[in-house]
Image (tube, rainbow, N blue to C red; front, side, top):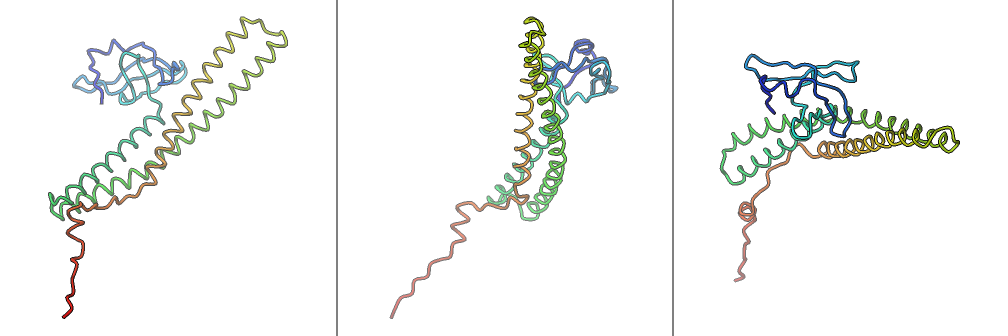
Length: 227
Protein backbone atom coordinates (compact mmCIF):
# COMPACT_ATOMS: atom_id res chain seq x y z
CA UNK A 1 0.00 0.00 0.00
CA UNK A 2 1.38 3.40 -0.98
CA UNK A 3 1.55 6.08 1.69
CA UNK A 4 0.58 9.70 1.16
CA UNK A 5 1.13 12.09 4.03
CA UNK A 6 -1.13 15.05 4.67
CA UNK A 7 1.94 17.29 4.36
CA UNK A 8 2.22 16.28 0.70
CA UNK A 9 -1.46 16.61 -0.22
CA UNK A 10 -0.95 19.88 -2.11
CA UNK A 11 0.89 17.85 -4.77
CA UNK A 12 -2.41 16.16 -5.65
CA UNK A 13 -5.27 18.58 -4.96
CA UNK A 14 -6.77 19.98 -8.16
CA UNK A 15 -4.66 17.70 -10.35
CA UNK A 16 -6.16 15.71 -13.26
CA UNK A 17 -6.77 11.98 -12.90
CA UNK A 18 -6.22 9.57 -15.80
CA UNK A 19 -6.98 5.91 -16.30
CA UNK A 20 -4.18 3.50 -17.39
CA UNK A 21 -5.29 3.83 -21.03
CA UNK A 22 -4.83 7.59 -21.30
CA UNK A 23 -8.34 8.92 -20.70
CA UNK A 24 -8.66 11.95 -18.46
CA UNK A 25 -11.48 10.94 -16.14
CA UNK A 26 -11.60 13.74 -13.59
CA UNK A 27 -9.82 15.76 -10.91
CA UNK A 28 -8.89 15.30 -7.27
CA UNK A 29 -10.94 17.80 -5.27
CA UNK A 30 -10.50 16.53 -1.71
CA UNK A 31 -9.02 13.93 0.58
CA UNK A 32 -9.58 11.96 3.78
CA UNK A 33 -6.92 11.16 6.36
CA UNK A 34 -6.56 9.37 9.68
CA UNK A 35 -5.48 11.04 12.97
CA UNK A 36 -1.85 10.14 12.21
CA UNK A 37 -1.86 12.23 9.03
CA UNK A 38 -1.99 9.34 6.57
CA UNK A 39 -4.26 9.97 3.56
CA UNK A 40 -6.45 6.91 2.90
CA UNK A 41 -8.72 8.17 0.10
CA UNK A 42 -9.24 10.95 -2.43
CA UNK A 43 -12.47 12.68 -3.40
CA UNK A 44 -12.64 12.65 -7.19
CA UNK A 45 -14.77 14.74 -9.52
CA UNK A 46 -15.71 12.58 -12.51
CA UNK A 47 -16.64 14.78 -15.45
CA UNK A 48 -18.02 17.52 -13.14
CA UNK A 49 -21.26 15.58 -12.63
CA UNK A 50 -20.24 12.67 -10.37
CA UNK A 51 -18.30 12.92 -7.12
CA UNK A 52 -16.96 9.88 -5.33
CA UNK A 53 -14.54 8.93 -2.57
CA UNK A 54 -11.95 6.46 -3.90
CA UNK A 55 -9.50 4.43 -1.81
CA UNK A 56 -5.88 5.42 -2.28
CA UNK A 57 -5.07 1.76 -3.00
CA UNK A 58 -6.54 2.21 -6.48
CA UNK A 59 -4.19 5.07 -7.41
CA UNK A 60 -0.75 4.96 -8.97
CA UNK A 61 1.16 8.10 -8.04
CA UNK A 62 4.38 8.78 -9.86
CA UNK A 63 6.11 10.34 -12.83
CA UNK A 64 3.25 9.45 -15.18
CA UNK A 65 0.79 11.60 -13.24
CA UNK A 66 -2.14 10.42 -11.16
CA UNK A 67 -3.47 7.14 -12.52
CA UNK A 68 -6.71 5.62 -11.24
CA UNK A 69 -6.91 1.87 -11.86
CA UNK A 70 -10.45 0.94 -13.03
CA UNK A 71 -12.59 -0.95 -10.53
CA UNK A 72 -12.71 -4.09 -12.72
CA UNK A 73 -8.93 -4.14 -13.11
CA UNK A 74 -8.28 -3.47 -9.42
CA UNK A 75 -10.58 -6.34 -8.41
CA UNK A 76 -9.00 -8.65 -11.01
CA UNK A 77 -5.45 -7.90 -9.84
CA UNK A 78 -6.41 -8.37 -6.20
CA UNK A 79 -7.99 -11.79 -6.73
CA UNK A 80 -5.25 -12.96 -9.12
CA UNK A 81 -2.54 -12.08 -6.59
CA UNK A 82 -4.49 -13.66 -3.73
CA UNK A 83 -5.03 -16.99 -5.50
CA UNK A 84 -1.43 -17.19 -6.74
CA UNK A 85 -0.09 -16.34 -3.27
CA UNK A 86 -2.25 -19.01 -1.62
CA UNK A 87 -1.19 -21.66 -4.12
CA UNK A 88 2.47 -20.80 -3.58
CA UNK A 89 2.00 -21.12 0.18
CA UNK A 90 0.32 -24.53 -0.19
CA UNK A 91 3.12 -25.66 -2.49
CA UNK A 92 5.75 -24.45 0.00
CA UNK A 93 3.89 -26.21 2.84
CA UNK A 94 3.84 -29.46 0.89
CA UNK A 95 7.55 -29.15 0.21
CA UNK A 96 8.30 -28.68 3.93
CA UNK A 97 6.18 -31.72 4.79
CA UNK A 98 7.88 -33.83 2.12
CA UNK A 99 11.22 -32.95 3.69
CA UNK A 100 9.83 -33.86 7.14
CA UNK A 101 10.56 -30.36 8.40
CA UNK A 102 7.11 -29.92 9.98
CA UNK A 103 4.94 -32.42 11.93
CA UNK A 104 1.78 -33.91 10.45
CA UNK A 105 -0.62 -32.08 12.81
CA UNK A 106 0.87 -28.67 11.89
CA UNK A 107 0.82 -29.56 8.20
CA UNK A 108 -2.83 -30.67 8.20
CA UNK A 109 -4.03 -27.68 10.24
CA UNK A 110 -2.24 -25.06 8.15
CA UNK A 111 -3.12 -26.74 4.86
CA UNK A 112 -6.81 -26.90 5.76
CA UNK A 113 -6.75 -23.18 6.58
CA UNK A 114 -5.02 -22.33 3.27
CA UNK A 115 -7.38 -24.50 1.22
CA UNK A 116 -10.42 -22.87 2.86
CA UNK A 117 -9.01 -19.47 1.94
CA UNK A 118 -8.34 -20.69 -1.60
CA UNK A 119 -11.91 -21.97 -1.92
CA UNK A 120 -13.24 -18.58 -0.78
CA UNK A 121 -10.95 -16.80 -3.24
CA UNK A 122 -12.21 -18.97 -6.08
CA UNK A 123 -15.80 -18.08 -5.20
CA UNK A 124 -14.84 -14.39 -5.21
CA UNK A 125 -13.20 -15.02 -8.58
CA UNK A 126 -16.60 -15.82 -10.10
CA UNK A 127 -17.97 -12.47 -8.95
CA UNK A 128 -14.99 -10.61 -10.38
CA UNK A 129 -15.41 -12.40 -13.71
CA UNK A 130 -19.01 -11.14 -13.79
CA UNK A 131 -17.74 -7.58 -13.31
CA UNK A 132 -15.20 -8.06 -16.09
CA UNK A 133 -17.80 -9.57 -18.39
CA UNK A 134 -19.98 -6.49 -17.93
CA UNK A 135 -17.06 -4.20 -18.75
CA UNK A 136 -16.38 -6.25 -21.89
CA UNK A 137 -20.01 -5.72 -22.93
CA UNK A 138 -19.76 -1.97 -22.25
CA UNK A 139 -16.59 -1.72 -24.33
CA UNK A 140 -18.19 -3.61 -27.21
CA UNK A 141 -21.03 -1.06 -27.20
CA UNK A 142 -18.55 1.83 -27.11
CA UNK A 143 -16.56 0.40 -30.02
CA UNK A 144 -19.70 -0.12 -32.12
CA UNK A 145 -20.83 3.47 -31.41
CA UNK A 146 -17.44 4.94 -32.33
CA UNK A 147 -17.17 2.91 -35.53
CA UNK A 148 -20.69 3.96 -36.52
CA UNK A 149 -19.89 7.63 -35.90
CA UNK A 150 -16.64 7.42 -37.84
CA UNK A 151 -18.37 5.79 -40.80
CA UNK A 152 -21.03 8.53 -40.80
CA UNK A 153 -18.34 11.23 -40.73
CA UNK A 154 -16.62 9.67 -43.73
CA UNK A 155 -19.88 9.69 -45.67
CA UNK A 156 -20.44 13.39 -44.82
CA UNK A 157 -16.86 14.24 -45.79
CA UNK A 158 -16.97 12.41 -49.14
CA UNK A 159 -20.34 14.04 -49.84
CA UNK A 160 -18.61 17.44 -49.46
CA UNK A 161 -20.74 18.28 -46.41
CA UNK A 162 -17.68 18.70 -44.17
CA UNK A 163 -14.43 20.56 -44.68
CA UNK A 164 -11.21 18.58 -44.54
CA UNK A 165 -10.15 20.43 -41.38
CA UNK A 166 -13.39 19.63 -39.52
CA UNK A 167 -13.36 16.02 -40.71
CA UNK A 168 -9.75 15.47 -39.68
CA UNK A 169 -10.23 17.02 -36.24
CA UNK A 170 -13.33 14.94 -35.50
CA UNK A 171 -12.05 11.68 -37.01
CA UNK A 172 -8.69 11.92 -35.19
CA UNK A 173 -10.51 12.22 -31.87
CA UNK A 174 -12.74 9.24 -32.67
CA UNK A 175 -9.77 7.13 -33.81
CA UNK A 176 -7.92 7.93 -30.58
CA UNK A 177 -10.90 6.91 -28.45
CA UNK A 178 -11.37 3.78 -30.56
CA UNK A 179 -7.74 2.80 -30.05
CA UNK A 180 -8.08 3.31 -26.28
CA UNK A 181 -11.25 1.20 -26.12
CA UNK A 182 -9.63 -1.61 -28.12
CA UNK A 183 -6.56 -1.53 -25.87
CA UNK A 184 -8.69 -1.75 -22.74
CA UNK A 185 -10.75 -4.55 -24.29
CA UNK A 186 -7.55 -6.54 -24.87
CA UNK A 187 -6.59 -6.04 -21.22
CA UNK A 188 -10.08 -7.09 -20.08
CA UNK A 189 -9.85 -10.26 -22.18
CA UNK A 190 -6.41 -11.11 -20.77
CA UNK A 191 -7.57 -10.79 -17.16
CA UNK A 192 -10.78 -12.71 -17.83
CA UNK A 193 -8.86 -15.64 -19.32
CA UNK A 194 -6.35 -15.61 -16.46
CA UNK A 195 -9.10 -15.70 -13.84
CA UNK A 196 -10.86 -18.46 -15.76
CA UNK A 197 -7.68 -20.57 -15.71
CA UNK A 198 -7.08 -19.90 -12.01
CA UNK A 199 -10.65 -20.91 -11.20
CA UNK A 200 -10.25 -24.23 -13.04
CA UNK A 201 -7.18 -25.28 -11.06
CA UNK A 202 -7.85 -27.87 -8.30
CA UNK A 203 -8.15 -26.76 -4.70
CA UNK A 204 -6.11 -29.66 -3.31
CA UNK A 205 -2.63 -29.34 -4.76
CA UNK A 206 -1.62 -32.48 -2.89
CA UNK A 207 1.63 -33.66 -1.41
CA UNK A 208 4.36 -34.34 -3.90
CA UNK A 209 6.77 -37.00 -2.73
CA UNK A 210 10.45 -36.26 -3.03
CA UNK A 211 12.64 -38.59 -5.08
CA UNK A 212 14.10 -39.99 -1.87
CA UNK A 213 10.65 -40.80 -0.50
CA UNK A 214 9.57 -42.32 -3.80
CA UNK A 215 12.60 -44.56 -3.73
CA UNK A 216 11.91 -45.55 -0.14
CA UNK A 217 8.31 -46.40 -0.96
CA UNK A 218 9.21 -48.73 -3.81
CA UNK A 219 8.64 -52.42 -2.97
CA UNK A 220 11.78 -54.36 -2.10
CA UNK A 221 12.49 -56.94 -4.81
CA UNK A 222 12.44 -60.53 -3.58
CA UNK A 223 14.70 -63.07 -5.22
CA UNK A 224 13.56 -66.69 -4.96
CA UNK A 225 16.38 -69.24 -5.08
CA UNK A 226 15.51 -72.63 -6.39
CA UNK A 227 16.83 -75.61 -4.44
